[in-house]
Amino acid sequence: NITIIGATGSGKSTTAAAIALRALAHADRHVLVIDGKSDWARYADAYGGTVVRFTGTQTAINMLDVPAGMDPALAADHQMRACRVLLEIIAKRRLTDTELLALSRATAALPAGARLSDVRRLIDTPDDTGATDTEVAELRAAGRTLLAPLARITAPGSTHARLLDRPSTVTFDPAAPLFVVSLGDLEVTSDLR
Image (cartoon, rainbow, N blue to C red; front, side, top):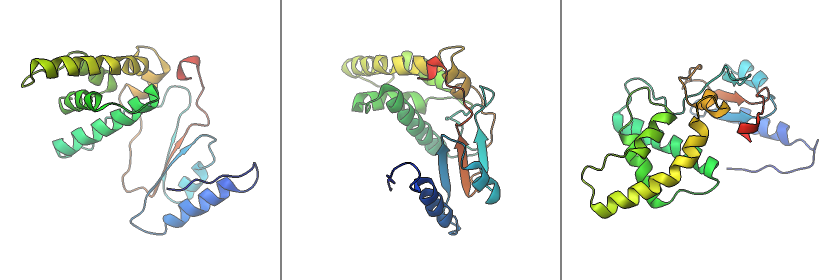
């Protein structure tokens, strides 16, 4: 991991691009860029990469998508990690061990084609099979603390839900050397702040 710090115009973006593009010379390396200013699309186009442009709310990425045929345990792990990262960003804190357990139980029970609203439903009504009364009480309490951030990003009609809680409108190519998520054209609405 690196951090590049400098004054405006000092070459931070150029340096980052040089490092990232140099990594592409190695066949086993892939680069993911979340681009707030839409500067990286030209690099992805030149290097055979993929660009996802968020324009309005037509583009959606379901973070819980998994490749067809993926081992169920790996799929649940991917979905758990995706939910964890998103919830920690929205909640602006690390999840507790009990919250992680509640989230893990919910993601392990997700159906095919699951969305974030499914995670919210499963946390709201957990499967208590095999848990002691104390564990059930702890899981329900931990689950309640996850419901507020989940509600924020799955509220029907919200910008978050239109971007993240519906089927993906883009396809990820795991072989693409450079994957750019371009946010420069995304209209920032009050519910995204």
